Amino acid sequence: MIVVTSGSRYIDIDAYASCMAYRELLKLKGIPAKAISTAKINESITKSLSQFDAKLDKLENNSEDEYIVIDVSNQEYFDKIIKQDRIIEIIDHHTGFESYWGEKLGEKADIEFIGAVATKIVERYEQENLLDKMNQEIAYLLMAAILDNTLNFKAKVTTLRDKNAYQKLEKITGNDSNYGEKYFLECQEDMEKNLVQAIQNDTKLEQVNEIIPYVFGQLTVWDKKNILENKNTISQTLCAFGKEWMMNLICLKDEKSYILAQNQQVKEKIEKLMGSKFKDDIMVLSEVWLRKEIIKKSFY
Image (spheres, helix red, strand yellow):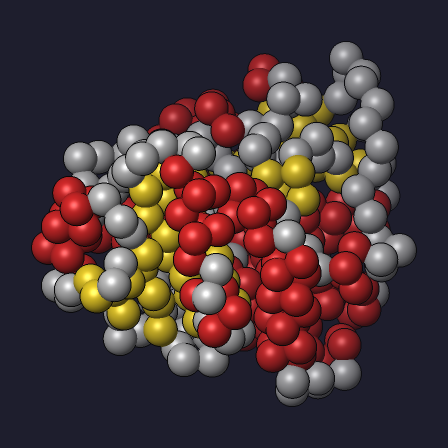
């Protein structure tokens, strides 16, 4: 059996949708497969999406299973179920481990920069001439994944391939032009019901360099107002991880990022990095930035 899986700490809509879509593609090709994850599901997987018939499979350990890993290529963050000597394919859009996996898997190491890994899965369906066999639920999941990872196509990581893949999915679902706004509003509604958990579920804990603090949270919302009114909750939640923290609050309605921080040293480093100033512990950026884009900028 082939097990399609992803990362360990949490699973977002890109990994969730892509794992299930790839499982269905394998089945269409006559290959037995399951999509399994032991990670927490975060708020990018909305209530309506989680109620689809398309769901993750139950965990069943089998020593003969082979693994396809999606949306992660750093083995430190693999789901705990993965046996690394039985990995047969890696599909990721986070670069950095191309050489390592290229030596091990050859052309089965498909790692390249692109907005969403879901885009690569859509392209796989196309390559197999099976796009017309994709059901609407899988298409909606993949649409949400592309929207989430490209910030409604406003993020700098967005590529023409992401846009083309989304247009093909729209044809399957019926060209719902307001789907992006509906999706992000539902994400925000779910988030606001348990803001602490939402912050915990999307906080990166890693000392990537001397500029970016160890604790780096991120939330994507349609409207920032209700979230900024809960600055104390954000502070308390991130302080529980460490005193030096920052939060990237992405507001799609404004098409801007709002950076929150309290530690003076963190503020000074981020001001120098982003070329903007904090006011009342908030820095307003003129466009949306993904956390990974800010981290990437910190290395140059």
